[in-house]
Length: 610
Image (cartoon, rainbow, N blue to C red; front, side):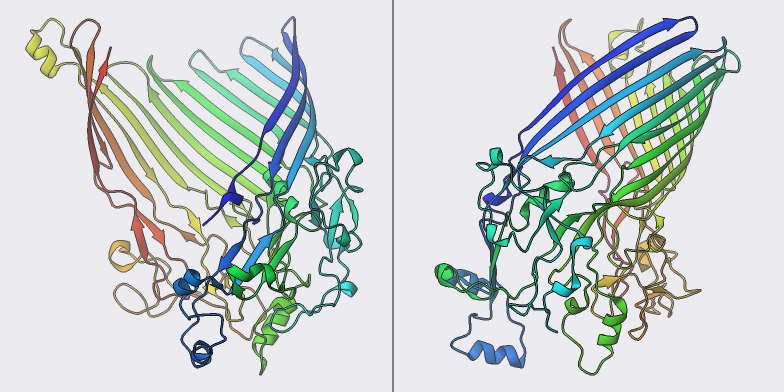
Protein backbone atom coordinates (compact mmCIF):
# COMPACT_ATOMS: atom_id res chain seq x y z
CA UNK A 1 0.00 0.00 0.00
CA UNK A 2 1.35 3.43 -0.92
CA UNK A 3 1.74 6.05 1.77
CA UNK A 4 2.14 9.83 1.55
CA UNK A 5 5.27 9.35 -0.57
CA UNK A 6 2.95 8.57 -3.49
CA UNK A 7 1.56 12.14 -3.44
CA UNK A 8 2.48 14.04 -6.59
CA UNK A 9 3.67 17.63 -6.40
CA UNK A 10 3.72 19.05 -9.92
CA UNK A 11 2.81 22.73 -10.38
CA UNK A 12 3.28 23.58 -14.04
CA UNK A 13 3.50 26.82 -15.99
CA UNK A 14 3.30 26.92 -19.77
CA UNK A 15 4.22 30.23 -21.43
CA UNK A 16 3.59 30.69 -25.14
CA UNK A 17 4.08 33.71 -27.36
CA UNK A 18 2.90 33.28 -30.93
CA UNK A 19 1.88 35.32 -33.93
CA UNK A 20 0.69 34.58 -37.46
CA UNK A 21 0.58 36.66 -40.63
CA UNK A 22 -1.58 36.04 -43.69
CA UNK A 23 -0.78 37.50 -47.10
CA UNK A 24 -3.11 37.00 -50.07
CA UNK A 25 -1.63 37.58 -53.50
CA UNK A 26 -3.45 36.40 -56.59
CA UNK A 27 -4.13 32.67 -56.39
CA UNK A 28 -1.82 32.29 -53.36
CA UNK A 29 -2.76 32.49 -49.70
CA UNK A 30 0.50 32.72 -47.77
CA UNK A 31 0.69 32.17 -44.03
CA UNK A 32 3.72 32.73 -41.82
CA UNK A 33 4.00 32.20 -38.09
CA UNK A 34 6.30 31.63 -35.18
CA UNK A 35 6.04 30.69 -31.54
CA UNK A 36 8.19 30.65 -28.44
CA UNK A 37 7.33 28.16 -25.68
CA UNK A 38 8.74 28.14 -22.17
CA UNK A 39 7.61 25.34 -19.88
CA UNK A 40 8.20 25.02 -16.14
CA UNK A 41 7.40 21.88 -14.13
CA UNK A 42 8.38 21.59 -10.47
CA UNK A 43 7.89 17.90 -9.67
CA UNK A 44 8.89 15.69 -6.78
CA UNK A 45 10.47 12.29 -7.31
CA UNK A 46 7.91 10.43 -5.15
CA UNK A 47 10.70 8.35 -3.68
CA UNK A 48 10.12 5.77 -0.99
CA UNK A 49 10.96 8.15 1.85
CA UNK A 50 8.27 6.71 4.16
CA UNK A 51 9.89 3.28 4.01
CA UNK A 52 8.73 -0.14 2.84
CA UNK A 53 8.76 -3.27 4.98
CA UNK A 54 8.39 -6.75 3.52
CA UNK A 55 7.01 -9.63 5.57
CA UNK A 56 7.62 -12.93 3.80
CA UNK A 57 6.25 -16.27 4.92
CA UNK A 58 9.02 -18.88 5.10
CA UNK A 59 8.30 -21.91 2.85
CA UNK A 60 7.63 -25.20 4.56
CA UNK A 61 10.87 -27.14 4.14
CA UNK A 62 13.37 -28.89 6.39
CA UNK A 63 15.64 -25.85 6.49
CA UNK A 64 12.82 -23.41 7.22
CA UNK A 65 11.34 -25.73 9.84
CA UNK A 66 14.62 -25.60 11.70
CA UNK A 67 14.57 -21.81 11.27
CA UNK A 68 11.10 -21.63 12.81
CA UNK A 69 12.24 -23.70 15.82
CA UNK A 70 15.21 -21.39 16.34
CA UNK A 71 14.35 -18.96 19.14
CA UNK A 72 16.58 -16.28 17.63
CA UNK A 73 15.01 -16.42 14.17
CA UNK A 74 13.42 -13.17 13.00
CA UNK A 75 10.18 -14.79 11.85
CA UNK A 76 7.13 -16.63 13.12
CA UNK A 77 6.95 -18.31 9.71
CA UNK A 78 3.65 -16.48 9.03
CA UNK A 79 3.64 -13.15 7.19
CA UNK A 80 0.62 -11.69 8.97
CA UNK A 81 1.95 -12.61 12.40
CA UNK A 82 5.32 -11.08 11.55
CA UNK A 83 3.58 -7.87 10.47
CA UNK A 84 1.66 -7.67 13.75
CA UNK A 85 4.81 -7.88 15.85
CA UNK A 86 6.94 -5.80 13.41
CA UNK A 87 9.43 -8.50 12.38
CA UNK A 88 10.39 -7.72 8.79
CA UNK A 89 12.46 -9.75 6.35
CA UNK A 90 13.56 -6.61 4.46
CA UNK A 91 13.17 -2.88 4.89
CA UNK A 92 14.17 0.02 2.64
CA UNK A 93 13.83 3.77 2.99
CA UNK A 94 14.84 6.73 0.81
CA UNK A 95 16.63 9.68 2.37
CA UNK A 96 14.28 12.38 1.03
CA UNK A 97 11.66 13.34 -1.53
CA UNK A 98 13.71 15.43 -3.96
CA UNK A 99 12.11 18.11 -6.10
CA UNK A 100 13.33 18.92 -9.58
CA UNK A 101 12.73 22.27 -11.23
CA UNK A 102 12.38 21.10 -14.82
CA UNK A 103 12.48 23.58 -17.70
CA UNK A 104 12.55 23.62 -21.47
CA UNK A 105 12.58 26.21 -24.25
CA UNK A 106 11.12 25.66 -27.70
CA UNK A 107 11.05 27.81 -30.83
CA UNK A 108 8.87 27.06 -33.84
CA UNK A 109 8.21 28.74 -37.17
CA UNK A 110 6.28 27.86 -40.30
CA UNK A 111 5.52 29.04 -43.81
CA UNK A 112 2.57 27.78 -45.84
CA UNK A 113 1.14 28.47 -49.27
CA UNK A 114 -2.45 27.57 -50.17
CA UNK A 115 -2.28 27.75 -53.94
CA UNK A 116 -5.39 27.56 -56.12
CA UNK A 117 -3.66 26.33 -59.27
CA UNK A 118 -6.87 25.92 -61.28
CA UNK A 119 -10.58 25.84 -60.55
CA UNK A 120 -10.21 22.11 -59.90
CA UNK A 121 -6.79 21.82 -58.28
CA UNK A 122 -5.64 23.20 -54.91
CA UNK A 123 -2.18 22.68 -53.43
CA UNK A 124 -0.98 23.06 -49.84
CA UNK A 125 2.77 23.51 -49.52
CA UNK A 126 4.40 24.15 -46.17
CA UNK A 127 7.53 23.95 -44.07
CA UNK A 128 7.83 23.93 -40.28
CA UNK A 129 10.97 24.43 -38.23
CA UNK A 130 11.12 23.26 -34.60
CA UNK A 131 13.92 23.82 -32.11
CA UNK A 132 13.02 21.05 -29.68
CA UNK A 133 15.20 21.09 -26.60
CA UNK A 134 14.86 18.43 -23.88
CA UNK A 135 13.91 19.11 -20.27
CA UNK A 136 16.76 20.25 -18.07
CA UNK A 137 16.95 20.89 -14.29
CA UNK A 138 17.82 24.33 -12.98
CA UNK A 139 19.54 22.73 -9.99
CA UNK A 140 21.31 19.97 -11.96
CA UNK A 141 20.13 17.63 -9.18
CA UNK A 142 19.85 14.46 -11.25
CA UNK A 143 22.06 11.62 -12.37
CA UNK A 144 22.09 9.26 -15.31
CA UNK A 145 23.61 5.91 -16.14
CA UNK A 146 25.85 6.22 -19.18
CA UNK A 147 27.36 2.96 -20.51
CA UNK A 148 30.30 4.98 -21.86
CA UNK A 149 31.12 6.07 -18.30
CA UNK A 150 31.11 2.50 -16.95
CA UNK A 151 34.61 1.17 -16.38
CA UNK A 152 34.80 -2.64 -15.95
CA UNK A 153 38.10 -2.21 -14.10
CA UNK A 154 36.24 -0.35 -11.35
CA UNK A 155 33.33 -2.78 -11.11
CA UNK A 156 32.24 -4.21 -7.78
CA UNK A 157 32.67 -7.89 -7.08
CA UNK A 158 29.39 -9.82 -7.19
CA UNK A 159 29.04 -13.17 -5.46
CA UNK A 160 27.43 -16.25 -6.98
CA UNK A 161 24.40 -15.53 -4.76
CA UNK A 162 23.96 -12.10 -6.32
CA UNK A 163 25.38 -10.00 -3.47
CA UNK A 164 28.03 -7.28 -3.55
CA UNK A 165 31.31 -7.90 -1.74
CA UNK A 166 31.69 -4.77 0.48
CA UNK A 167 34.74 -2.63 -0.19
CA UNK A 168 35.22 -3.77 -3.77
CA UNK A 169 35.01 -1.47 -6.76
CA UNK A 170 32.72 1.51 -7.25
CA UNK A 171 29.06 0.64 -6.56
CA UNK A 172 28.04 3.76 -8.55
CA UNK A 173 30.16 2.85 -11.56
CA UNK A 174 28.54 4.34 -14.70
CA UNK A 175 26.49 7.02 -12.96
CA UNK A 176 27.17 10.59 -14.10
CA UNK A 177 25.87 13.79 -12.54
CA UNK A 178 24.10 16.27 -14.81
CA UNK A 179 25.90 19.48 -15.75
CA UNK A 180 28.91 20.83 -13.88
CA UNK A 181 27.47 20.93 -10.38
CA UNK A 182 24.65 22.66 -8.56
CA UNK A 183 24.61 26.38 -9.51
CA UNK A 184 25.17 28.75 -6.60
CA UNK A 185 21.72 30.33 -6.97
CA UNK A 186 20.11 26.88 -6.71
CA UNK A 187 21.87 25.64 -3.58
CA UNK A 188 18.87 26.47 -1.39
CA UNK A 189 16.62 24.30 -3.55
CA UNK A 190 18.85 21.21 -3.68
CA UNK A 191 18.94 19.53 -0.27
CA UNK A 192 20.05 16.22 1.28
CA UNK A 193 22.88 15.75 -1.23
CA UNK A 194 25.48 13.15 -0.27
CA UNK A 195 28.51 15.16 -1.37
CA UNK A 196 30.83 12.39 -0.15
CA UNK A 197 29.84 10.43 -3.27
CA UNK A 198 30.96 13.16 -5.68
CA UNK A 199 34.36 11.50 -6.29
CA UNK A 200 32.55 8.26 -7.20
CA UNK A 201 29.92 9.94 -9.41
CA UNK A 202 31.56 12.47 -11.74
CA UNK A 203 29.76 15.44 -13.30
CA UNK A 204 29.53 16.13 -17.02
CA UNK A 205 26.34 14.55 -18.33
CA UNK A 206 24.38 16.83 -20.72
CA UNK A 207 22.01 19.11 -18.82
CA UNK A 208 19.10 17.69 -20.81
CA UNK A 209 20.55 14.14 -20.64
CA UNK A 210 20.85 14.15 -24.46
CA UNK A 211 21.16 16.72 -27.22
CA UNK A 212 18.45 17.45 -29.79
CA UNK A 213 18.95 19.43 -32.97
CA UNK A 214 16.63 21.67 -34.94
CA UNK A 215 14.05 19.78 -36.96
CA UNK A 216 12.62 20.73 -40.37
CA UNK A 217 9.31 19.17 -41.38
CA UNK A 218 7.95 19.63 -44.92
CA UNK A 219 4.22 19.36 -45.72
CA UNK A 220 2.45 18.80 -49.02
CA UNK A 221 -1.21 18.24 -49.82
CA UNK A 222 -3.55 18.48 -52.77
CA UNK A 223 -7.25 18.38 -53.59
CA UNK A 224 -8.50 17.76 -57.12
CA UNK A 225 -12.16 17.98 -58.13
CA UNK A 226 -12.73 15.45 -60.93
CA UNK A 227 -16.26 16.77 -61.33
CA UNK A 228 -19.04 18.23 -59.17
CA UNK A 229 -19.53 14.95 -57.28
CA UNK A 230 -16.07 13.37 -57.23
CA UNK A 231 -12.81 14.51 -55.66
CA UNK A 232 -9.36 13.11 -54.94
CA UNK A 233 -7.26 14.27 -51.99
CA UNK A 234 -3.87 13.35 -50.66
CA UNK A 235 -0.93 14.57 -48.64
CA UNK A 236 2.32 13.79 -46.89
CA UNK A 237 4.11 15.41 -44.00
CA UNK A 238 7.04 14.97 -41.66
CA UNK A 239 6.21 15.55 -37.97
CA UNK A 240 8.56 15.83 -35.01
CA UNK A 241 7.41 15.71 -31.41
CA UNK A 242 8.70 16.32 -27.92
CA UNK A 243 9.10 13.34 -25.57
CA UNK A 244 7.03 13.67 -22.42
CA UNK A 245 8.55 14.77 -19.14
CA UNK A 246 7.93 11.34 -17.59
CA UNK A 247 11.10 10.35 -19.37
CA UNK A 248 13.30 12.40 -17.03
CA UNK A 249 11.37 12.89 -13.80
CA UNK A 250 12.62 9.66 -12.20
CA UNK A 251 16.28 10.66 -12.63
CA UNK A 252 15.88 12.65 -9.40
CA UNK A 253 15.88 9.42 -7.44
CA UNK A 254 19.51 8.44 -7.98
CA UNK A 255 22.66 8.98 -5.92
CA UNK A 256 24.15 11.33 -4.84
CA UNK A 257 20.91 13.34 -4.70
CA UNK A 258 19.02 10.49 -3.10
CA UNK A 259 20.19 7.58 -0.95
CA UNK A 260 18.37 4.35 -0.21
CA UNK A 261 19.06 2.53 3.04
CA UNK A 262 18.29 -1.19 3.24
CA UNK A 263 18.04 -3.66 6.13
CA UNK A 264 17.86 -7.41 5.67
CA UNK A 265 16.02 -8.42 8.85
CA UNK A 266 14.93 -6.75 12.05
CA UNK A 267 12.05 -5.23 13.96
CA UNK A 268 10.31 -1.96 13.14
CA UNK A 269 10.65 -0.77 16.76
CA UNK A 270 14.45 -0.90 16.61
CA UNK A 271 15.03 -0.04 12.95
CA UNK A 272 16.96 3.09 13.95
CA UNK A 273 19.65 1.06 15.70
CA UNK A 274 20.17 -1.58 12.98
CA UNK A 275 23.22 -1.83 10.76
CA UNK A 276 22.39 -1.03 7.12
CA UNK A 277 22.90 -3.69 4.50
CA UNK A 278 25.45 -2.66 1.90
CA UNK A 279 25.67 -5.97 0.06
CA UNK A 280 22.49 -5.70 -2.00
CA UNK A 281 22.47 -4.81 -5.68
CA UNK A 282 21.11 -1.40 -6.59
CA UNK A 283 17.42 -1.78 -7.35
CA UNK A 284 16.13 -1.24 -10.87
CA UNK A 285 16.90 2.26 -12.12
CA UNK A 286 15.87 4.32 -15.13
CA UNK A 287 18.42 5.77 -17.53
CA UNK A 288 18.40 7.95 -20.63
CA UNK A 289 20.55 7.16 -23.63
CA UNK A 290 22.82 10.19 -24.32
CA UNK A 291 22.80 9.30 -28.05
CA UNK A 292 19.05 9.90 -28.40
CA UNK A 293 17.79 11.73 -31.50
CA UNK A 294 14.63 13.60 -32.40
CA UNK A 295 11.65 11.23 -32.77
CA UNK A 296 9.75 11.77 -36.01
CA UNK A 297 6.88 10.36 -38.08
CA UNK A 298 6.06 10.49 -41.77
CA UNK A 299 2.28 10.56 -42.33
CA UNK A 300 0.66 10.15 -45.73
CA UNK A 301 -2.77 9.58 -47.26
CA UNK A 302 -4.57 9.31 -50.59
CA UNK A 303 -8.36 9.38 -50.75
CA UNK A 304 -11.31 9.28 -53.11
CA UNK A 305 -14.71 10.83 -52.27
CA UNK A 306 -17.94 10.48 -54.23
CA UNK A 307 -21.37 12.06 -53.67
CA UNK A 308 -23.59 9.20 -54.87
CA UNK A 309 -26.95 10.85 -54.23
CA UNK A 310 -28.04 14.03 -52.50
CA UNK A 311 -27.77 12.34 -49.09
CA UNK A 312 -25.29 9.47 -49.62
CA UNK A 313 -21.51 9.95 -49.57
CA UNK A 314 -18.84 7.27 -50.02
CA UNK A 315 -15.12 7.49 -49.33
CA UNK A 316 -12.10 5.27 -49.83
CA UNK A 317 -8.77 6.24 -48.29
CA UNK A 318 -5.32 4.79 -47.97
CA UNK A 319 -3.55 6.15 -44.89
CA UNK A 320 -0.23 5.29 -43.37
CA UNK A 321 2.67 6.38 -41.24
CA UNK A 322 6.29 5.45 -40.68
CA UNK A 323 7.92 6.40 -37.37
CA UNK A 324 11.60 6.33 -36.46
CA UNK A 325 13.63 7.10 -33.34
CA UNK A 326 10.64 6.24 -31.18
CA UNK A 327 10.93 5.62 -27.45
CA UNK A 328 11.45 2.18 -25.95
CA UNK A 329 12.79 1.16 -22.53
CA UNK A 330 14.69 -2.15 -22.56
CA UNK A 331 16.73 -3.52 -19.70
CA UNK A 332 20.29 -2.99 -20.96
CA UNK A 333 21.68 -4.94 -17.99
CA UNK A 334 20.28 -8.24 -19.21
CA UNK A 335 22.60 -11.09 -18.27
CA UNK A 336 24.89 -12.61 -20.91
CA UNK A 337 22.97 -15.55 -22.36
CA UNK A 338 25.97 -17.78 -23.07
CA UNK A 339 27.28 -17.46 -19.52
CA UNK A 340 23.82 -18.04 -18.04
CA UNK A 341 23.32 -21.24 -20.05
CA UNK A 342 26.78 -22.53 -19.15
CA UNK A 343 26.04 -21.85 -15.48
CA UNK A 344 22.69 -23.66 -15.62
CA UNK A 345 24.36 -26.76 -17.03
CA UNK A 346 27.26 -26.80 -14.59
CA UNK A 347 27.46 -29.24 -11.70
CA UNK A 348 27.02 -26.46 -9.12
CA UNK A 349 25.03 -23.63 -10.74
CA UNK A 350 24.87 -20.19 -9.16
CA UNK A 351 21.59 -19.22 -7.53
CA UNK A 352 21.66 -15.80 -9.22
CA UNK A 353 22.42 -14.57 -12.75
CA UNK A 354 23.56 -11.11 -11.52
CA UNK A 355 27.20 -12.13 -11.82
CA UNK A 356 26.70 -12.41 -15.59
CA UNK A 357 25.19 -8.95 -16.08
CA UNK A 358 27.33 -6.51 -18.10
CA UNK A 359 27.04 -3.72 -15.50
CA UNK A 360 27.97 -5.20 -12.14
CA UNK A 361 26.23 -3.96 -9.02
CA UNK A 362 22.88 -3.16 -10.61
CA UNK A 363 19.74 -5.19 -11.20
CA UNK A 364 17.72 -3.82 -14.12
CA UNK A 365 18.81 -0.66 -15.94
CA UNK A 366 15.80 0.43 -17.94
CA UNK A 367 17.23 2.68 -20.60
CA UNK A 368 15.01 5.21 -22.38
CA UNK A 369 16.22 4.99 -25.96
CA UNK A 370 14.95 6.69 -29.12
CA UNK A 371 15.77 3.91 -31.58
CA UNK A 372 12.48 2.09 -32.06
CA UNK A 373 10.50 1.93 -35.31
CA UNK A 374 6.80 1.63 -36.16
CA UNK A 375 4.72 1.59 -39.31
CA UNK A 376 0.98 1.61 -39.93
CA UNK A 377 -0.88 1.14 -43.20
CA UNK A 378 -4.63 0.94 -43.67
CA UNK A 379 -7.38 0.85 -46.27
CA UNK A 380 -10.39 2.76 -44.95
CA UNK A 381 -13.83 2.68 -46.54
CA UNK A 382 -16.72 4.81 -45.41
CA UNK A 383 -20.33 5.41 -46.45
CA UNK A 384 -22.92 7.66 -44.90
CA UNK A 385 -26.49 8.80 -45.35
CA UNK A 386 -27.01 12.10 -43.56
CA UNK A 387 -30.62 13.08 -44.14
CA UNK A 388 -34.10 11.55 -44.04
CA UNK A 389 -36.00 9.49 -41.53
CA UNK A 390 -33.15 6.94 -41.58
CA UNK A 391 -29.50 7.97 -41.38
CA UNK A 392 -26.51 5.68 -41.09
CA UNK A 393 -22.73 5.41 -41.32
CA UNK A 394 -20.74 2.36 -42.37
CA UNK A 395 -16.99 2.18 -41.82
CA UNK A 396 -14.55 -0.64 -42.57
CA UNK A 397 -10.81 -0.63 -41.94
CA UNK A 398 -8.25 -3.19 -43.04
CA UNK A 399 -4.95 -2.29 -41.42
CA UNK A 400 -1.61 -3.54 -40.22
CA UNK A 401 0.57 -2.08 -37.44
CA UNK A 402 4.12 -3.34 -37.10
CA UNK A 403 7.02 -2.32 -34.89
CA UNK A 404 9.84 -3.46 -32.66
CA UNK A 405 8.46 -2.30 -29.32
CA UNK A 406 5.06 -2.04 -27.68
CA UNK A 407 3.94 1.01 -25.70
CA UNK A 408 7.54 2.20 -25.10
CA UNK A 409 8.47 -1.25 -23.79
CA UNK A 410 9.50 -4.57 -25.20
CA UNK A 411 10.38 -8.07 -24.08
CA UNK A 412 13.50 -8.15 -21.97
CA UNK A 413 15.52 -10.67 -23.94
CA UNK A 414 17.71 -9.93 -26.96
CA UNK A 415 17.04 -6.20 -26.67
CA UNK A 416 19.96 -5.28 -28.95
CA UNK A 417 18.42 -6.99 -31.98
CA UNK A 418 15.49 -4.85 -33.10
CA UNK A 419 14.60 -7.39 -35.80
CA UNK A 420 14.06 -10.06 -33.16
CA UNK A 421 11.40 -7.93 -31.53
CA UNK A 422 9.74 -6.78 -34.79
CA UNK A 423 6.20 -7.93 -35.39
CA UNK A 424 2.52 -7.15 -34.95
CA UNK A 425 1.87 -4.51 -32.31
CA UNK A 426 -0.62 -5.02 -29.49
CA UNK A 427 -2.75 -2.12 -30.73
CA UNK A 428 -3.13 -3.70 -34.18
CA UNK A 429 -6.73 -4.63 -35.00
CA UNK A 430 -6.44 -6.10 -38.45
CA UNK A 431 -10.08 -5.68 -39.41
CA UNK A 432 -12.73 -3.43 -37.92
CA UNK A 433 -16.28 -2.76 -39.07
CA UNK A 434 -18.46 -0.17 -37.35
CA UNK A 435 -22.05 0.67 -38.31
CA UNK A 436 -24.29 3.24 -36.70
CA UNK A 437 -27.87 4.08 -37.53
CA UNK A 438 -30.72 6.34 -36.43
CA UNK A 439 -34.31 5.54 -37.38
CA UNK A 440 -36.61 8.47 -36.61
CA UNK A 441 -40.32 7.67 -36.76
CA UNK A 442 -42.60 10.48 -38.04
CA UNK A 443 -44.39 12.61 -35.44
CA UNK A 444 -47.78 11.63 -36.98
CA UNK A 445 -48.95 15.21 -36.90
CA UNK A 446 -52.57 15.51 -38.00
CA UNK A 447 -53.58 12.36 -36.11
CA UNK A 448 -55.40 12.40 -32.80
CA UNK A 449 -53.40 12.89 -29.64
CA UNK A 450 -53.56 9.22 -28.57
CA UNK A 451 -52.07 7.91 -31.81
CA UNK A 452 -49.56 10.76 -31.92
CA UNK A 453 -48.26 10.17 -28.39
CA UNK A 454 -48.36 6.38 -28.40
CA UNK A 455 -47.08 5.59 -31.88
CA UNK A 456 -45.38 8.74 -33.16
CA UNK A 457 -41.97 10.31 -32.60
CA UNK A 458 -40.08 7.20 -31.44
CA UNK A 459 -36.40 6.99 -32.27
CA UNK A 460 -34.35 3.79 -32.63
CA UNK A 461 -30.56 4.12 -32.78
CA UNK A 462 -27.66 1.77 -32.41
CA UNK A 463 -24.00 0.97 -32.99
CA UNK A 464 -22.59 -2.36 -34.12
CA UNK A 465 -18.90 -3.23 -33.99
CA UNK A 466 -17.10 -6.24 -35.44
CA UNK A 467 -13.39 -6.24 -34.71
CA UNK A 468 -10.56 -8.74 -34.91
CA UNK A 469 -8.42 -9.37 -31.86
CA UNK A 470 -5.19 -7.88 -30.56
CA UNK A 471 -1.79 -9.50 -31.06
CA UNK A 472 0.14 -11.02 -28.17
CA UNK A 473 3.45 -12.67 -27.42
CA UNK A 474 3.68 -16.16 -26.00
CA UNK A 475 5.91 -16.60 -22.98
CA UNK A 476 7.42 -19.55 -21.21
CA UNK A 477 9.34 -19.96 -17.97
CA UNK A 478 13.03 -19.94 -18.80
CA UNK A 479 14.92 -23.18 -18.28
CA UNK A 480 18.03 -21.21 -17.26
CA UNK A 481 16.61 -18.85 -14.60
CA UNK A 482 15.82 -15.82 -16.80
CA UNK A 483 12.17 -15.43 -15.81
CA UNK A 484 9.57 -15.55 -18.60
CA UNK A 485 10.93 -15.29 -22.13
CA UNK A 486 9.79 -16.10 -25.66
CA UNK A 487 9.62 -19.85 -26.32
CA UNK A 488 10.21 -21.98 -29.42
CA UNK A 489 7.46 -22.70 -31.91
CA UNK A 490 7.10 -26.38 -32.83
CA UNK A 491 6.84 -26.45 -36.66
CA UNK A 492 3.50 -27.74 -37.91
CA UNK A 493 1.81 -27.70 -34.51
CA UNK A 494 -1.73 -26.34 -34.44
CA UNK A 495 -2.03 -23.11 -32.44
CA UNK A 496 -5.76 -22.34 -32.27
CA UNK A 497 -8.61 -24.54 -31.10
CA UNK A 498 -11.71 -24.68 -33.32
CA UNK A 499 -14.15 -24.17 -30.42
CA UNK A 500 -12.63 -21.60 -28.08
CA UNK A 501 -15.54 -21.51 -25.64
CA UNK A 502 -15.41 -25.25 -24.97
CA UNK A 503 -11.78 -26.25 -25.37
CA UNK A 504 -9.77 -23.16 -24.59
CA UNK A 505 -8.68 -20.62 -27.15
CA UNK A 506 -5.25 -22.14 -27.87
CA UNK A 507 -4.08 -25.72 -28.21
CA UNK A 508 -2.20 -26.65 -25.03
CA UNK A 509 -0.92 -30.03 -26.22
CA UNK A 510 -2.75 -31.97 -23.51
CA UNK A 511 -4.27 -34.43 -25.97
CA UNK A 512 -7.69 -34.07 -24.33
CA UNK A 513 -10.84 -32.53 -25.74
CA UNK A 514 -10.02 -30.38 -28.78
CA UNK A 515 -6.30 -30.24 -27.87
CA UNK A 516 -3.68 -32.09 -29.88
CA UNK A 517 -0.98 -34.15 -28.23
CA UNK A 518 1.68 -31.78 -29.55
CA UNK A 519 2.15 -28.48 -27.69
CA UNK A 520 2.76 -25.64 -30.16
CA UNK A 521 5.16 -23.71 -27.91
CA UNK A 522 7.92 -25.07 -25.69
CA UNK A 523 10.70 -23.47 -23.68
CA UNK A 524 14.08 -23.35 -25.41
CA UNK A 525 16.33 -26.31 -24.48
CA UNK A 526 18.42 -25.79 -21.39
CA UNK A 527 21.60 -26.69 -23.24
CA UNK A 528 21.25 -24.15 -26.08
CA UNK A 529 22.45 -20.56 -25.71
CA UNK A 530 19.84 -18.90 -27.90
CA UNK A 531 16.55 -17.05 -27.65
CA UNK A 532 13.20 -18.56 -28.55
CA UNK A 533 12.16 -18.58 -32.22
CA UNK A 534 8.43 -17.91 -31.70
CA UNK A 535 7.55 -14.86 -33.86
CA UNK A 536 6.83 -11.56 -32.16
CA UNK A 537 3.08 -11.03 -31.73
CA UNK A 538 2.36 -14.57 -32.92
CA UNK A 539 -1.06 -14.88 -31.22
CA UNK A 540 -4.14 -13.10 -32.49
CA UNK A 541 -6.48 -12.85 -29.53
CA UNK A 542 -10.27 -13.16 -29.48
CA UNK A 543 -12.17 -10.57 -31.47
CA UNK A 544 -15.06 -8.38 -30.44
CA UNK A 545 -18.63 -8.39 -31.75
CA UNK A 546 -21.09 -6.13 -29.99
CA UNK A 547 -24.30 -4.30 -30.81
CA UNK A 548 -25.78 -1.57 -28.63
CA UNK A 549 -29.24 -0.09 -29.22
CA UNK A 550 -31.38 2.69 -27.79
CA UNK A 551 -35.10 3.42 -28.02
CA UNK A 552 -36.22 6.90 -26.95
CA UNK A 553 -39.09 9.36 -27.18
CA UNK A 554 -39.96 12.85 -25.92
CA UNK A 555 -43.32 13.39 -24.20
CA UNK A 556 -44.46 17.01 -23.91
CA UNK A 557 -45.98 17.91 -20.53
CA UNK A 558 -46.35 21.65 -20.98
CA UNK A 559 -44.90 24.14 -23.42
CA UNK A 560 -41.79 24.46 -21.25
CA UNK A 561 -41.51 20.92 -19.81
CA UNK A 562 -40.72 17.70 -21.63
CA UNK A 563 -39.99 14.19 -20.40
CA UNK A 564 -37.61 11.93 -22.29
CA UNK A 565 -38.01 8.18 -21.99
CA UNK A 566 -35.00 6.09 -22.97
CA UNK A 567 -34.28 2.35 -22.97
CA UNK A 568 -30.70 1.22 -23.60
CA UNK A 569 -29.47 -2.27 -24.40
CA UNK A 570 -25.73 -2.95 -24.37
CA UNK A 571 -24.55 -6.10 -26.13
CA UNK A 572 -28.18 -6.64 -27.08
CA UNK A 573 -27.41 -9.92 -28.90
CA UNK A 574 -25.73 -11.21 -25.71
CA UNK A 575 -22.66 -12.42 -27.55
CA UNK A 576 -19.83 -13.76 -25.42
CA UNK A 577 -16.66 -11.73 -26.05
CA UNK A 578 -13.72 -13.54 -24.52
CA UNK A 579 -10.93 -11.84 -22.60
CA UNK A 580 -8.07 -12.77 -20.26
CA UNK A 581 -6.03 -15.15 -22.42
CA UNK A 582 -3.35 -17.16 -20.56
CA UNK A 583 -0.16 -16.90 -22.62
CA UNK A 584 2.43 -18.70 -20.48
CA UNK A 585 3.21 -21.88 -22.38
CA UNK A 586 4.77 -23.43 -19.26
CA UNK A 587 1.44 -23.41 -17.40
CA UNK A 588 -1.12 -26.19 -17.55
CA UNK A 589 -3.85 -23.63 -18.23
CA UNK A 590 -2.03 -22.20 -21.25
CA UNK A 591 -4.45 -21.02 -23.91
CA UNK A 592 -7.48 -20.87 -21.63
CA UNK A 593 -9.82 -17.91 -21.27
CA UNK A 594 -10.21 -16.50 -17.77
CA UNK A 595 -12.81 -13.78 -18.32
CA UNK A 596 -15.20 -12.13 -20.74
CA UNK A 597 -16.58 -8.69 -21.45
CA UNK A 598 -20.01 -7.92 -19.94
CA UNK A 599 -23.10 -9.81 -21.17
CA UNK A 600 -26.32 -8.11 -22.21
CA UNK A 601 -27.18 -5.16 -19.98
CA UNK A 602 -30.43 -3.20 -19.98
CA UNK A 603 -31.28 0.14 -18.44
CA UNK A 604 -34.31 2.42 -18.40
CA UNK A 605 -34.29 6.14 -17.81
CA UNK A 606 -36.53 9.18 -17.55
CA UNK A 607 -35.23 12.69 -17.97
CA UNK A 608 -37.16 15.89 -17.31
CA UNK A 609 -36.19 18.88 -19.44
CA UNK A 610 -37.47 22.33 -18.55
